Image (cartoon, rainbow, N blue to C red; front, side):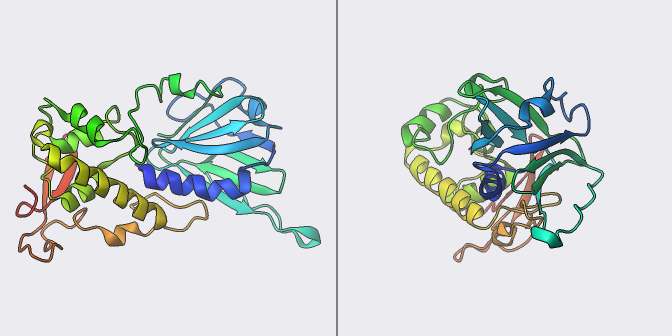
Length: 283
């Protein structure tokens, strides 16, 4: 599933072609994805100007001139792909839609944006702008990891007394929003913290450095266009490339990349996911 960096990459890719533009035509080509689409979704979107694009956790938020906000979740395999129509008298015919292009947005500039989702675990909904934090999908989310609310004091209090592993705690969207398996594995390796350690046992002096590496990894991943594993593509269809910088994720039995460590990366099942870590230098 796309994590925070991948969704932020998509937001940045869409912003130049959507912000300030009117959606002149909207085609909804099925009744829904993971859940049914909202009533009259095409009619509510068509003719509306996109005022701005935001991200909350792993959700895209498009604020519209109608004082409504389109909420988009990419699910497991969802992609927002941009096709630019050629301009002037030499315009080529619009490319045929693909089988899994379930929602198509045609902007006044001629740019065509398709929400493509082969597995159909994605979602779209509409809410009143300003009320999105009360929406059922967003109301339970914790603070953004790049924001000021995700502080040493906050995380220390959130972890206090928790008997779950620190890996599971950081994946809990109620504690911190947007983190997923890849970036938690990478952050815990950089911080030298074992994913198997109980959250309550992460010491206060470790909290600040852990927050710092989480932010650093997310920033680096965004700069790299996210990580492309299986289905994720940027809005231009190209791959992100942060996966080439993985220190532990997917590197089972390979040598630890910490210069003073002789360990090998292990894969340990945790809560239905694979935790990649170095048993020697992560304690």
